[in-house]
Length: 373
Ligand SMILES: Cc1ncc(COP(=O)(O)O)c(C=O)c1O
Image (cartoon, rainbow, N blue to C red; front, side):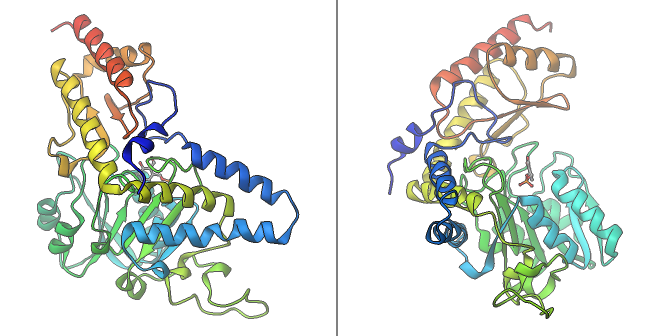
């Protein structure tokens, strides 16, 4: 195990960064692994090329181990959205989905329905934006075959309880977009049937580092519609067109990007060495600190207060007439956040230090003193 202080010290970016939900600046070990592998791929030596290619297996195995699932049930993907598209193009029947989900889910589902008509979307709109087990239970119909949710909602920061959702939906498929929580909150991934994520936010691995898990139930019920030559068993199929593999491998198109896989493997190893639970506790504290400052200056928070129902995202919802002034004050204090639709999404990571939280306090104090009540 790596101690948490070493992990926290590895956050070497500039103060003021509170936008981990948008993009995670790469960790030093990911950066140096990327440099080393790039050099190896320039050598023209078969052994070096093979060495880099092996990172794909390592990345897959590490992702499986963080999820607590079998290696063979996990496949690398270019991104979360690619993984979700495999699931949504292959599913049949009613798919329950919040209209407010990130467009990776809503657009993929709509396009799949338009193209194939084998599924239809059962749109739901929770008033608070939270796809809670009670809300899902109340909206299930006999026709619902799958429920698609985010592990952590990109807008409100609400964290879904996967085990509770499983209890509610019975043996229907549970499709999870995990990007806003993977590696930073402990989740019962075995309760899900499809889990898709990417390493470029909270894992600090850069883009191209997606992966997806498919349970046995998912393999039985989701057709591998977008399966390519890499989605077959055995050697490169030449002059024949074999069936898709019977494992999660079916949900792949072509060979993975080994450089991206190397970054993902490094980031996952770093995460596993510290422990997701340890990282979660640090992030929960940072989120509580952000909420404390927001409360102090009377800026409304829409993110749940209960640490079990949130992760690294804290969303502020100022009065509509205050939104621009709040965003301006944050920017003037050198803070990087996401301001969208009148709300401000603040996302701190374990390595977000006191200097950044002080800047946040200063920005909110200035905003508050200029506010006209
Ligand atoms: C909840 C959620 N899902 C999916 C994505 C996009 O993921 P990817 O770029 O891996 O397809 C984002 C990006 O912000 C997101 O917040």
